[in-house]
Image 1 (cartoon, rainbow, N blue to C red):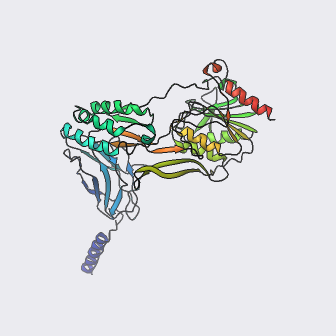
Image 2: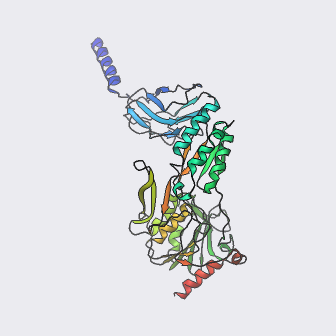
Length: 450
């Protein structure tokens, strides 16, 4: 009887192994390509392979590290035990990958048991820098100017310029020298969304031009009542003469996470920004001030605009690269959708804009332009939108290229043109020495409409 039981147990054990079931045991990584600790990895390797000891669920949690390889396509499962990570590697570089952590645990077996956090470290072998430069030049002329969205509108013969300097690139003695020679040529573009990263340093092709700014930091906040702000003062709110006021100096804060305190005491309780906005919506007029805002994360801007939208609305048209035509003619319409935290605001919204407004903040202006109860007031925006994407050359130089051409819904190119306000109020820097003249004019406009 005992013998029969032992044979049955063995059969069940081997059936469990063959069927891929985990039997309650956490999965493990049993092999990788390249191997852990390999310091002579070929930089031409295009795919990292990770193999597990049992069948896995289709999810994954690849955790970003300081030395995560550049991906070239979506990571994917080859089969239930084999995971593929397409990459582009550069020579003589340490790389690290992390699988699962205490927060993200989507590498799981079929029973839902997660892989205990694990990692992979390896280093690529060194190659002659002259060889790398020649390879990098081939890569450069393959992506540039082809993948630079504004190349067609700059009026520059980039191919001729790059070709003329081929020997300069190929004879560079270091990645930094290569980058400096390249940036010297690319500065012709004068594009704030086009830059180069090398050895932790950024080289820009275009600095923001000095503009006739139409604001004065700090003056306005002092005259508000019921003042609230975040810890960095990039978001400030208050009330003036029964007019709600909400100011954002950048789009680096997620509205869902943003907390504000009553001004004057750091020990005051925090209020969610959404609750503050809801309080301000009790007033018949609301001013949203983004004059100082030069951009950031467009999704954060959408969260604010979506609070006041009743239905889906298009707000911006972008053209991206079309593989079939080889041109930037693939059209995509950006849309704004109502928020689940919708504020049914029936009053009038005034958005303060000006020459410092650019990038994702110009998209915010285009969003708010679509609202029937909203007026954009001030001066034309800066005119620069790019959504840059990275391209790393074999010698370690990373080129960031604008990936789209952005247009207003009426077909006007934003790059170099900006977005016009609905109501233009032209001011000079000198107008903001002692008071915020634009704010005062908007207040007068509101009073005149009563």
